Amino acid sequence: MNEIDQYLNRHYQRADRVMLPIVWLLFVMSLALSGWHDTLKWALLIGLPAALIPTALIFASPGSLMTRSSFAAAVMIFAGLHIHQAAGMSELHFGIFVLLAILLVYRSWFVILVAAAVIALHHLSFNYLQQWGYDVVCFTKPGLGIVLSHAAYVVVEAAVLSYLSVLMHREIVQSAELDVRVTALAAGGNGDIDLSALPVKAQSKSAKDLEAVVATLRATVLSVRQGTDTIATASSQIAAGNQDLSSRTEQQAS
Image 1 (cartoon, rainbow, N blue to C red):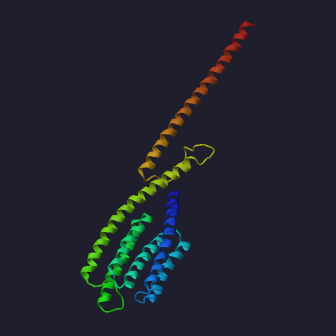
Image 2 (cartoon, helix red, strand yellow):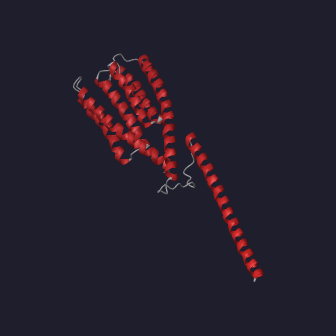
Image 3 (cartoon, rainbow, N blue to C red):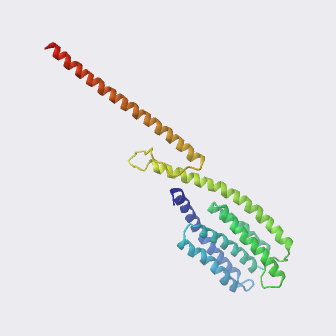
């Protein structure tokens, strides 16, 4: 894992820690809703594993893609669970859009798509299960039309959030590259600057610009050093010539 990946991994770990209390808050909300339509069984059977799995992954694989994806899936599972517990109340569907937006903390389009896929699968399957008479609820009045209308909103938000995630990811990569390069330049400490430091290849424009400046500065310093060496050599030759001339002058005088 190079320096950039390490920087990004630290960001993902911080995002995991942000998501952890949110997941458990959703579980508490599920417990609170359980008294409404006697759904404590579902709160424990569905909600508890949905909170425990990403919690365990934080310790087993912090900052990993699996952990990020588990949080994305977990919050959508809770959204579906809350909808079921509220007997399909429309207001509980709003939670989907709130939770999708919260996932921007990862700055990852993949996380957004995982969440969107989970809730899309939930709505489509539970709509038909509800129509077929199973003990699940997704809508007050199930039907393919309502599924498609909800899906349209989710698709639009997921597309916008994915685009924003790409932009935000570029920003954090740029920040990581600049941080790595500045750290490498000052690696010597004591105010020294190591112009020979060449971290991983730059991707962002700012990092490339910094590399160009460092390369120019390195070339300038090298040119000055070569000029200094030339002057020193010439000075030595002049001094030697003066010494030789002085010796011959003394010999002729004697």
